[in-house]
Image 1: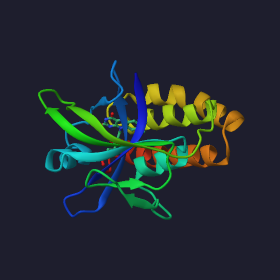
Image 2 (image 1 turned 90 degrees about the vertical axis):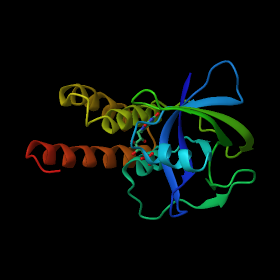
Image 3 (image 1 turned 60 degrees about the vertical axis):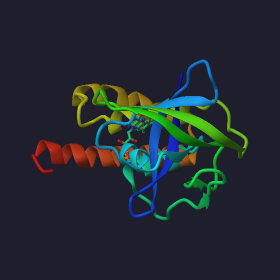
Amino acid sequence: MIIETLVTTINIDRSANLSPMGAVFGERLDIFELRPYAGSRTLENLRQRREGVMHVVDDALLLVRALLDQWPERPPLNLATVVAATMLKEYLRAYEFRAKYIDETSHRASITCEIVEQHIGKPPRGICRGLNAVVEASILISRSQFLPAEEINRHLPELEQIVAKTGNASDREAMALLLAHYHSTSARRTIGQP
Ligand SMILES: Cc1cc2nc3c(=O)[nH]c(=O)nc-3n(C[C@H](O)[C@H](O)[C@H](O)COP(=O)(O)O)c2cc1C
């Protein structure tokens, strides 16, 4: 099972890094796997300091802002209680973890993480198709460097419609940000700019 989460780690300059990452769970609930691509800051940070915090959230706008690194205001952070890292102030669940093993033999590293502390935050909003549709769209757009544009363009209109029909205002804002980012970067790609 993969839960789409937000992971905080500490950058080399000691600032906080916040990234959407899938957390893969097997039978055990105290261990999960992160699978960052080579070159990601989360991988580099966990190589340097093997600690971070994984957050379960249901805030699509926060997830999209973290993906695009676009903030009117950065989200408030607290110090974690067991590991040397920072954590979001608002979450559903937050799991402080230590990276036990890092396997980089494939293009996607496999990091086995052990949960050392957990925090219970806000109650979840419940199953919402609008939220799920923003998550799907954000994954598609985060892969736009290597997925064919036709595939992304095929799925986006339906996801957009689901968000419009079933999401809340923050889901709709998240979807609008994602689409604006996607259209501006795909226009740049078409005319060959970096
Ligand atoms: C819902 C969601 C899940 C993601 N899961 C992963 C993942 O498991 N591994 C990964 O390398 N990137 C994943 N990404 C893409 C990263 O968030 C994105 O590449 C980000 O820029 C990496 O940030 P970093 O360089 O600060 O680690 C995901 C994106 C989204 C929206």
